[in-house]
Length: 307
Ligand code: HEC
Ligand code: HEC
Image (cartoon, rainbow, N blue to C red):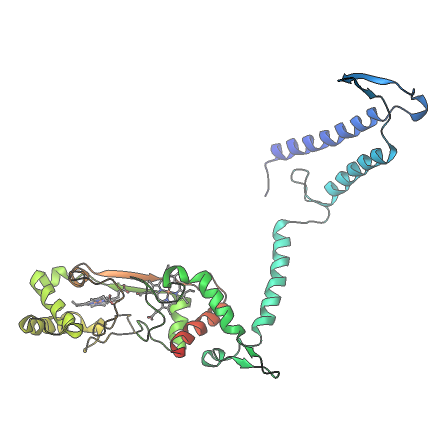
């Protein structure tokens, strides 16, 4: 941080005055020589009958103070402390942080080196060591990264919540292949379901809802279902597919299974069709390094392949 010159000078003056004042205080209190000292002389202070003798400071005590003053002066030459003066070592917090960061990175690279070049389907397999012990480092790291970066939205068991997809079922908005998962994490996703109330009208919304509901709750009014199917073919096919089983290119969910991204009670289906809805998976490319994203993708991939 660079201060204005006035502040810089102000700080230099305060620091220098302090050091000079300490040195003077030390000098003036140590003036009394041991040989001038009269035994039994008191300072005149007395508390409850206890008198304070006027004895000189012990030598070692005095030297300790002298050392602290020398330390302060040397420190202020080497390190920043005198206003904007940078110190001869050119030390900064940023450089110290960067150096520590390099150490952490090197340690991490060493740890990741054992698995990071494997393909994702290979990475999820535990390695059996020569001594028979099982090494599952990659997935242990993945689990920790998931807890830190993903569990707030997807749940600590990755089971999802209303508006946040479950990552442990086999229902995928954008696909379950390693490359789909990698892209979801690195680039983020932005699922937008446009509102259809204006295009469909109230009756149309009821009919399309009946058509969709009929997949999971059969026995809906068959006239409504038939009308709804026609309207579905006009307005919804592009994103949810001809058979309503979804479109992973656009993140249009499968509407025929009983897995819902958004909460469903009786009128919620209608309100989503009428008003639209959206959900955002944040882009993690800028938050995490490529290796961590690969380990996370492998971890997510392992969740479906474990079952
Ligand atoms: C701020 C909340 C939030 C965070 C944090 C978050 N996600 Fe997501 N994620 C979402 C939402 C919402 C979606 C669904 C997006 C959509 O509907 O288009 C999603 C979708 C996904 C998908 C696609 C699922 C599918 O069915 O295709 C994957 C994979 C995923 N997230 C993994 C992760 C991982 C791994 C992390 C941690 C690095 C993470 N998410 C962090 C909210 C979040
Ligand atoms: C432009 C593409 C697009 C069109 C067209 C579209 N949808 Fe969607 N729809 C989506 C997306 C994307 C989502 C997921 C929204 C999210 O990620 O939050 C969605 C979500 C839904 C949901 C909620 C699903 C769930 O699991 O909670 C329903 C119901 C739905 N759409 C019905 C329809 C109907 C009915 C039509 C036609 C009238 C339609 N959609 C047209 C893209 C579309």
